[in-house]
Length: 315
Image 1 (cartoon, helix red, strand yellow):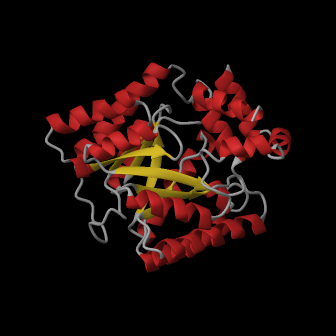
Image 2 (tube, one colour):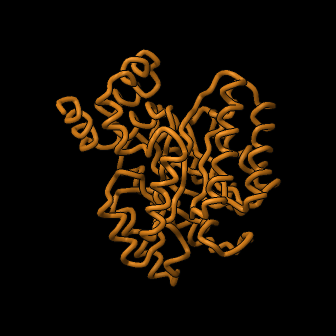
């Protein structure tokens, strides 16, 4: 019930307007969000690079409904790609299609994506398309395949809680598109998503193994960590990580054949543990003024995050 509440709040405009004006809310959110502009995020990214971590930077924002907002989001992404390149940060960029106008003007969205892909090609950086709620899964897969036809270094996210995800995995693997496997963080109906956590976990393991087992020799611009492998598992659920490591070891895969990804501000102990064991660990770093929906979804995921939020009320 608590998860459903916070997922509802993540989309409620009245709650967004109310909570973002509470100073303690930003104090709590800043544990998971690396500042409100890319300068702050790049400082944190560089520091984590120096410790050995790879980075994925995410300019927060979703469900824009005006042309100006979509153009501003695209300009931010283009500027971020330039700054990553200029500062030699080991990072790629994650984007959301609804942030670029997909839901109200597909022509505009595709035009902005061309602009982003042109800059990505110029800088040689990787772009990952985040997966949003199930209402735009089809369009996200289609658009990612189109992007991949223009620029090779493009990846996508697949959510293990959707029934359709196994089919989607085979679709994107056919196009040699690298996958970031997640469980899923939206409130989906039982008609499209597994309602039971055990089923979500089982599908996560199954799909991760399918992707790794494919052992695709897809072409990259170079072999640098800037261009991730075919599989990244994004989870703080250690049994999921251990299951994949066991599978990889038994089947003869190397540590560099996949990535372990975790979120900024969550389970630093696990991040350091797997980095010390020699696995590539990438930290997903969100930033920006549109932090509210992301923060609510983080509260929905773990009760410990809720207690952290509540403790800030009394500070």
